[in-house]
Structure formats: C-alpha cells, structure tokens
Length: 104
Image (cartoon, rainbow, N blue to C red):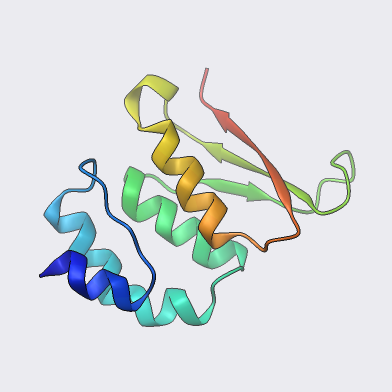
C-alpha cells in the first residue's frame, strides 16, 4: 500500500527504505512536494532516508554557478550512495548540478 501512495507524489522506494522511513516521508509528502526544488525539501528527504541532517551549501562563492554541495555526515559505506544520488536528482532544480561529500 505504501508504494502505491508514494506514486501520487512521484516517490520511488527501493529495498533500502524501511517501513518507518516510508511512512514518515509519506506523512510529510504534501509539504515536501509543495516545496520541491528547495534546499529545505531536499534536506528533509535526505534526513528521513539517512537519519542524519545533511548540510546543503548553495551560497559558497567557490562553487560554479548553479552548483551546490551536499555534505552527508556519515561514511559512504554506511549508506546507499545510488539512492542518495537519486533523491538529490529528483528533488533538485533541473538546471543545477551538485557535489556529494561524505564524512571521511
């Protein structure tokens, strides 16, 4: 039932999402979807998925135009990188690019 509800908001769950994560995302989907493309919405979806709040930097003058960085305070081996990239790709503005950084 949860994946069916997720389709209403164009959300795709793979096997790495547990039921609690799916329920939380679906409970907040109306607000997240309304603010899709903002750093707040992207941060919230990543936080629901990873369990930690990411840092999104879109004001660094050293970054190229229309580029932002996403810092995940976890080691890369602790998370599903492909799913994090998918989350970012579907929630970022289409004309932007990003750098994904994990804790060393």
